Length: 208
Image: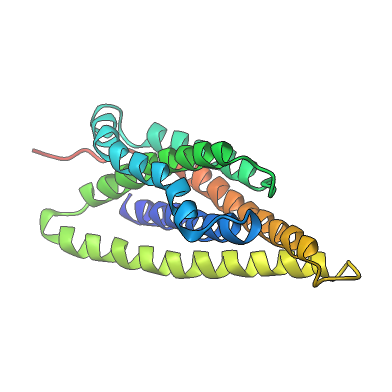
């Protein structure tokens, strides 16, 4: 379960960091908000993520990890599907709500899989297990953001290659929209992988 838990953490990290890369870019360059306003729009999701940690811990103790993780990835999949259709006319309220839902889903995954995975290790191996998970999160962040940025750029280039005036401001915004949608589709596919992995998670019993 430790290896599966670590892999699930990698998937979840890619989802989180992809969203955290794309949304600020689109809020500023696609929708015209300042960096401060973009940060404030995402703030409720971050707060919810912090609030969910103790709640998720209690649910994990009571029900185990599998259904929490399945539910979390399903929520993430739905939200990312909605984000893959984002437009410059999308309301702030929708983005705030969807980002909060995404943070809800990812928070239902992260703590349970880490704890369940570490529970399989002997106590003296906990520091090594934590180090491995932390390292893999950094690797996942690098791979996820690089891939998301590449998908976004490809989406922009594909759109701009088919129009006569790629320097027109309206076309630049639409191309950015196309690129962001493309990158969110990538994140949505990653969430499907996470959902499949979630069905193989089993609760590790800790011996007293």
